[in-house]
Image (tube, rainbow over all chains, first blue to last red; front, side, top):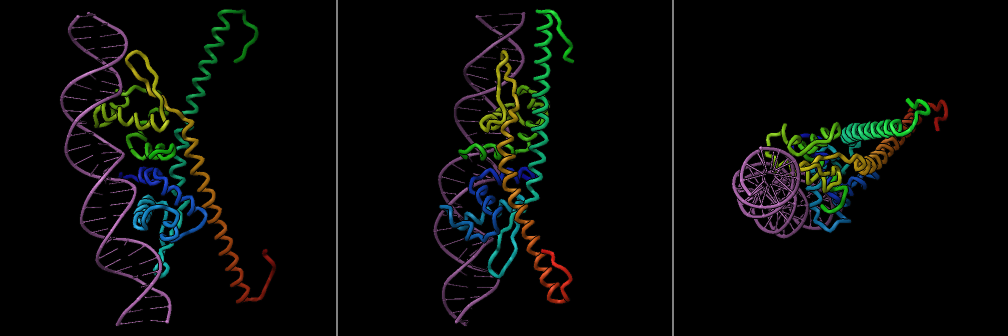
Length: 120
Length: 120
DNA sequence: TGCTTGTTCAACGAAATGGTTGACAACGCT
DNA sequence: AGCGTTGTCAACCATTTCGTTGAACAAGCA
């Protein structure tokens, strides 16, 4: 899983990591604070954090022995761009299909009854 | 990985699967057509397709012995909503931080030189 | 009926993932 | 210097993932 986008998607494929991101969107937090609500060890959370950091979703500064975790919102753009691009294509294609079907229906109409007006 | 969103993110964490989605955004395709560009067996692609299908990203119909694969664009909404929500929070917080810093700079100004006007 | 094409299922192996426990590094406090 | 707090590293284990090969199923065609 070398490329950036893959790391970002993989990072967010875990419910605990998504929840951490959600909480970090509200405020920075330390590892211990982040670990508190979950039924796993602090070490496990530290690992999750490493995954998020490798994906570029969070950064850690240093304050004495604390390592406050901060959400990097810019990375979301990467995903959003990818998603929106293909969604748009797919939806356009869907609309084109609708248009074709509508046209076919029109043609069928024209075959079965007399023409009334041009709907071009 | 039981929940829907996790399955969707995990499905898109693989470059081959993302590429398949990109191609399916342009046109429906069969398993063999999809497998053609990749250096893996058709069976492997069939498995990838199962992952995409379980995530609700694609559906398969039946045409004789073919199983054309179709992209379901609606699922993208799920991701987009999640991403946009937390990005927005994070960005707002960032702007609030900017405001606080600006305010602090203002206060520093006021300490070092005489007041000019109120910037509330 | 038997052959060919398209697709999936089953079993297996290598590597990655998510968790654990135990040790240890870095720092602030007294 | 010694102690408690915060966090990471290393080793290990169970499970999942991604790929393989080989067999089987499904549907059209000779």
